[in-house]
Amino acid sequence: MADLKVPRVNYVLISGRLTDDPQMNFTPKGTPVAKFRIASSRVYKDSTTGDWKEDTLFIDVKTFGQLAERCHKRLSKGSPVLLEGRLNYRSWEAQDKQKRSLVEIIGLRIQFLEKQTTSTGEEPEEEGIIEEEPEEDLPF
Image 1 (spheres, rainbow, N blue to C red):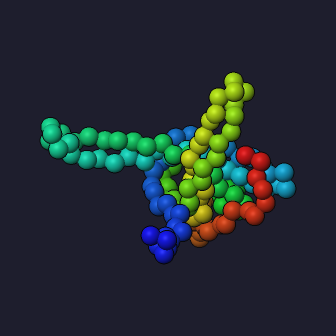
Image 2 (tube, rainbow, N blue to C red):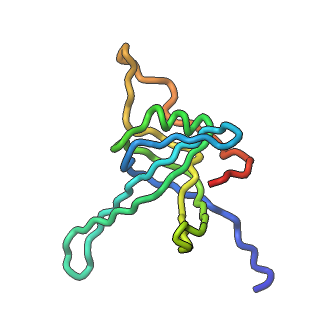
């Protein structure tokens, strides 16, 4: 077992709709950070009853830089997105001394699934953008 090499892959591809408008903040170095949550549902047939059921998962998402600015500008509650990114885990101690933790997606590419038109009725050129997260140590 010592010779087993496990690939280091942390990749997420998920679609859903925003549950609220994105919130914009900035790192101490001035890098834009957009935070939002998406709801992603799956429909399946219950094997025991034969009824169709739906499960919804709510996922926190964080984007950085130009992608964060674009998300803040283009997205709002209910906007459908296709999101590519990586999972991130963080933990902290709350004011009530309870340990808290969060698993979130760091969005690296987002495809806006709703068409946006300009005042002339034309579609904008860019629908999605790739943006790597900053290399600085983030305080949150």
